[in-house]
Length: 226
Image 1 (tube, helix red, strand yellow):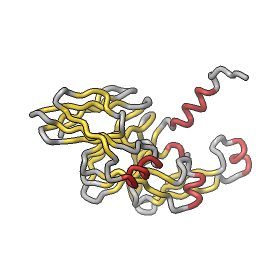
Image 2 (spheres, helix red, strand yellow):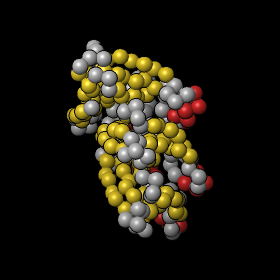
Image 3 (tube, helix red, strand yellow):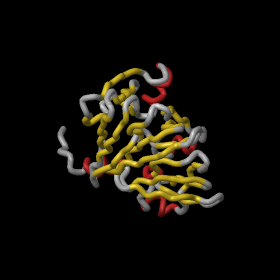
């Protein structure tokens, strides 16, 4: 399998497959493909796995695209302005991502639901209690709104983030919620009452444009009717 990512604001992922190789995505996730690609749609992993993916923001059914010729290609596009992030997962390696971040992956990559165990992180963490979990081995691709900034935190190193800007992180990163200090900061700082605390070791992916922020901005210009 080979891939290229093209574009700037609305990127395209084009995957080149050899005969017998496959990629899977949520239903409706493919943009265009060569004629010698077959499609198979099912509840990958069974009905319970499909329901878990549905809760995590993806579709109940997944579609697998398999190359039937000597050389094929399949293209996937973003649902919103942003970036495509390729991640090569080793066997057993896990990445935790925000809801609806999954774009596509090789069949060996398992997509499942991740449940936040900490009450505060689930209640005030911006994405709720349910996130996505990708388990290797294989190539997986995430679609992240806005630009992407990556940080590798050392053991014990901590950073505070507006929860809506967290796109993905390794499970070794300790995710918690901390209260904003100072009454004036809480009331007039614009960041709300809580920030996310990310403590290393581990890698984190941050996004510059949470979709909720974009939607709120656009709502200001939406015609107001009765």
